[in-house]
Image 1 (tube, rainbow, N blue to C red):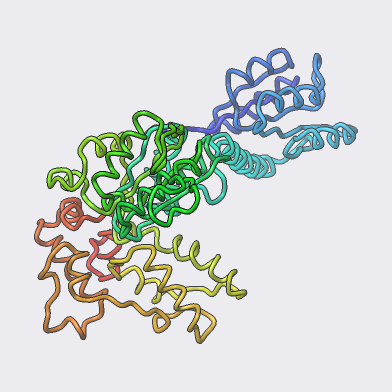
Image 2: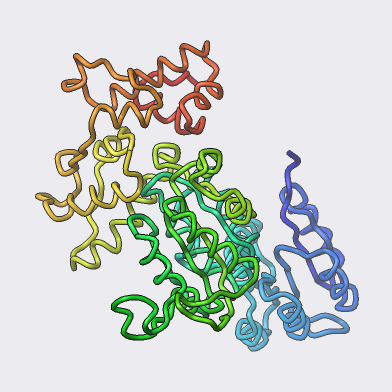
Length: 459
């Protein structure tokens, strides 16, 4: 990839200063110069500089006036004012108008370089914040993590959040499908409307219909009053149906009709009501297999499958673990009224070596238990209670015979997992990508586990 250099526009009426600065900065910056305001204004628009070095006084324009125009054109334009002796009042005025800083002529090269670096960093942060505001991304409206899978999901969120299409979220129990559904709502134009959710697991057909569609008074025994359903409560907002694979077939048919016709009736009702909500559904089942087994309606599946997202299990995004630990501990400590304790390196390694069959939900439970029973000032390995059966670990690793039964109770878990990962790499003749694919983990996660076990390739 070609090196993308930062751009700087230098505006000064002294050709010698322009030539000297251009010669000094040309190795690190892409430089454009202008001697007058008339040259500078179109140059700014065409060049889109990262930083502007602007003299306070020009022959045809005041530097203050140019600064004002640049800031109107771009809020994040980083401008450094240059001034000679006797221009202090103008410098103060320029700072009030948004100039980042100023340099007094003559200035040392080292001072110039340091000022440019600081200003460029400030400008970069301002652009990031502006991009977040323009895309409606606020603090807490992104999935926590740096793994490729989470970065991709955050990217997709921005692309689909504003659409009215249904979304199907797949993933194991406890991965955070409900959090992803909430983010879709928060970053959509529906954010001012309601977000309502329902877990379909364990609900009878009658109760599920009543919850979703509502019912009229007298529609069935004990229906003493009219009850609005979640379709009505959601209004023009978002309806999140978790574990939709558990929904009874006849209710699926009514849901499909509501989605396609944008209207529905309460149980026992005769009047059509509008269905303007956006549906986000989640499942830990393979719905395509459920369709093939006639346990889920194919027409509803294809209607839901307009946009399909996959929440990866925690074991496939171990590089996100430190971020998740901090994100979970912070609100827990706030609730408990205590300072957030650090997590020791060995404790973090213990967490990273665990297969997490219960995913992020299990991680939260482990950390909450650790806080409640914490005996020192930091969370150590002995504070972490990790409970998992041999079969659960084997299932997480994708094999029933993944662990040696005779030694299972006495070997450290990270050692067992490390042995298995190393064996997978050996079985693929050292092909890291193929081994990661067979283990259903990312190459970066595989490499991290090898490094913990001391089996990573030497750099």
